[in-house]
Length: 190
Image (tube, rainbow, N blue to C red; front, side, top):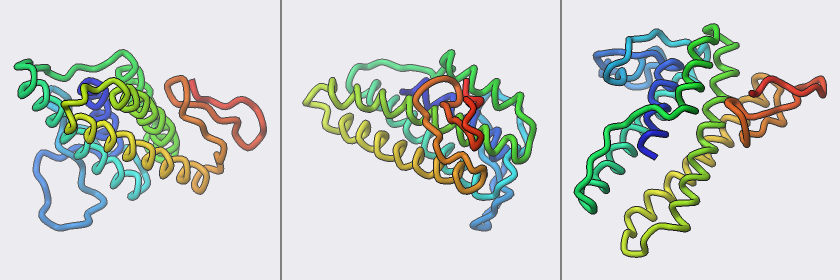
């Protein structure tokens, strides 16, 4: 889960942009996220203020979940793990990096991040089924991820329908998930 969440940091940074300093004013849609160590600063590619806001929230939550999982490893097993990109995460980041800023990016981001969330839901489900019963905090952690990711997928599917008229999006496979689009033809989705 640590590595999975790590790739979401860069994905959300591409949408929201990065800032090295924070503005104290609340509700600023133009503000970015803190950059992931070792990555270049980036300007926001998302056109929609609500998508940039969602990406900032995703970034914050992923950072906190990475820290919590690292704490579990240290506390329970005396182990450390530095986050690294998964192959799928790297491919999703490359897809977003290659997508033009604006409405095209918004569409691709919603599909790609929803797909990314679906993969976390399956990992969280595996965690809930296999977690050691003495690790109740881990069960709560995985349950929280499962619920938050499902809610995020629902929000992104709603945005895809309302903004792009893709009301049949499914995040179940590929880099971006799949949809048929409004013309009934198989759509881009990887």
